[in-house]
Image (cartoon, rainbow over all chains, first blue to last red; front, side):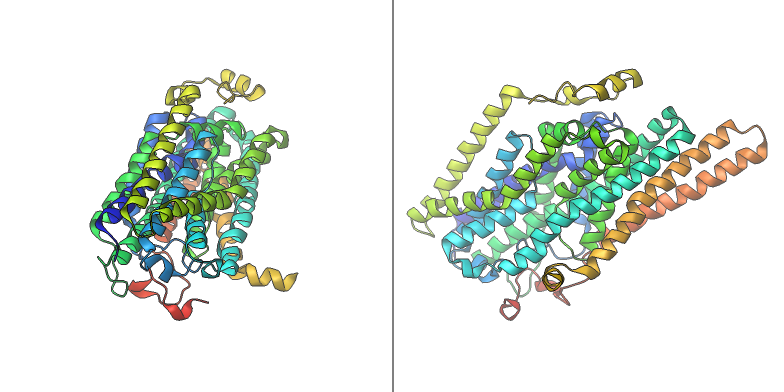
Length: 394
Length: 100
């Protein structure tokens, strides 16, 4: 059984990861609503935060285990499990912060899976990782899902603009803005359910490894649920403005019918896939949806260089988080795998890294006021569509 | 190649997701467009009948949209439906025998 101190560090790291997950993924639900002026930026993130909080409590199913079927669970709940989970969380969190610094939407779930795999490989052996399941349940869905969401959003956008010819621009703009609020809310709710539960699963793993809860008669303690829900909600409310800017303004110039098409397609894909047990990344689905919505209106309205940056980040997310998770384990292991000192050292390093990235990010900070479009008139919007968004250069 | 694809791609889940996405994504966008169109017809109607028809169209489309949200909420609160067969309450830790 591991030490109390390490367990506390794991819980703190878990909540911190959930916080980064929140502000990293606010963009998924709210970027398009902010970009079209459907909601004021601060209102949007607070709405999203509330729905994330509620979503975390919604599902009656047992908290999903991260990396289930990919990493041998006995490794994670064994004697070294606590530090291993800690290293994985630190790897994932640091990767999230790095991609946030570079303003790239990337999958928090992939980062967490990568962190777990990296720490496991360094700690034990690659034989504890089921590569076949990794390809089947993570990589293949990751490749397919943006295409599905993108294709559907493109179709929806195309049809919407056909209808708009009969509707008139102003009615369509206003009408679809209201629709956007609902579809974005649904994505927020689904995000809270899916992602907060992943962290609940990780913290519960640590509690099993520590011997606090039994693996056979398992239920997530209430304080873990509450802590995860609060962390993800606070993270969401803090607003990942950098990533919201990328998702809402830099991929393509989103108009309200496109925003509605992108969000409802994404919501449909996310909800259907989690219902049918097909795991995929919210971030990648929504990015695909936004891209599709851009293509559905006008093919050359999409900024392909931004898509290229995002694809690069997606490819490197799992290996990158794996390297960071593996490195965190290796550093902790210098002090002995189960020693308090090693766990403390990697936590301090992670905190220093997080502070460093945050300080660097302040140099070219993007705030909610830069993104507010609620007062933009149609004329200004047309001008915006012709030139790169004013806040695009980051 | 086909064998490889069927080994790694869960087709039965995939086509359901594509279908759900088409209905819930593109379908809802189109229905919502008709909702707005119905409101426009009603607002511009010169006769009572035209107004009635516009609101009827908007109402039906509105109901479809509300139904779509309801289905979405149902999917959130009742997941996951399928595999693994019956993980019951100990789903967090996969029994050793399923580890292959």
